[in-house]
Image 1 (tube, rainbow, N blue to C red):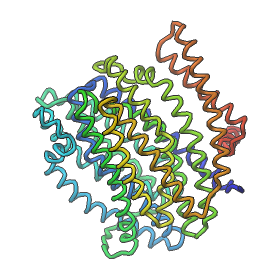
Image 2 (spheres, one colour):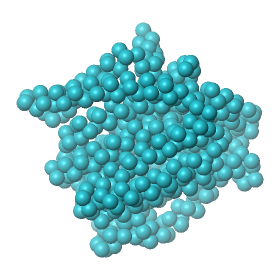
Image 3 (cartoon, one colour):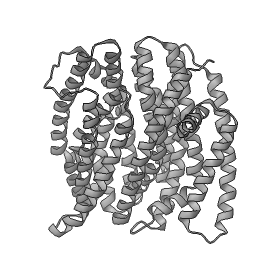
Length: 524
């Protein structure tokens, strides 16, 4: 297959910039979780925070980083490619205004109905009235976060479509920074006024959400955008965005059903199960964000433009190259996180109130979560292709199939595996979703090069196998030395990454070769 090398290089460069920005965000995100683990451990306060934040976060996935992003980028890229600048900016202003009105109504309703929402998503909390009331209070405080983060997603879509990737991807760094500084400051201050310290972290979440939006505004103005009072519900572009969002919301609604089911089951397990699963998934989100989301963000505008110009061959080649790139990064991450789960959790979280039992339980959940890591990354890349092709029914179908698989697996394994069953079911459901979507997309595109993809996958799996053997030997050797856990973990991560990269580069995987050559050329 003749690859679109120009697109591959563009995606690799953009994904590299996004990865650097996302890495900064994920590192600060881990620092945020370390602070939470140290201050609150895995007990009632943090369980309440996780459930309370999950409620507006479910809607964020629907209106911001999921349905809205894919739908808006597809329409905005079409306008930017085929229409004038005036119409394109009018669309952006109209979407921002319309979204602001809708989300304001939803936020007010959510704050008023916080109590029933908590009872719905975590009914077992009602057995401890203080826990239920704390969760309700935190939900009320954090609900306006939805408005900030959704507006930030629209701005990010505009900047990505204009070829600006670094600042938008760095925006979540400002969210974590605001959450840490504002949250810790308020957590130390509020107990003096008779309020729980965890309320301070909820206020910090709002500060972080505002900063995530505000940090992108200067870059947005440099693209030529000017905020104008436009609200036209009859505008064809706005209607098209909402039309594309409807099936996506239904499909993502299925994903949220999964999260609802998982939270419900976790709340019925041992005290701390909600926290263990949350800490574990935070670690999984690190490579998902750095690799899956980064490649998806870089790929989305390219595929949207190819689709707008009816260049299906460009869509095929770009998709296969992006998928190979995602596998190249996510599969070794799976091996590394599985092999080093316990020392990683221990080094990052085992401080303050987070004890050795919490470390073991979190590491167990992490091992099951990482089994689906490659599928998480691949779905992030695959779903936007359906939006670009204006065919959104199949992602909806895949999401509901994933719900059925998730519920079935949890029901069959919850007694034996407890909280680990939830992590296993999540991974299996995501793998099934990816296989379904990739088969359907292969038919929609009248085929894409499975030979190229398979050849790349063999090289990636071979290099990952060598890295796995290296990590086993390195861990045994380092355990016999008198060195700190942090130093030992750092040595294994760095050496494992170098071994994998060296083997894969020697096997001449095109996506890695393009990326390395660009880095070398830039350094020279």
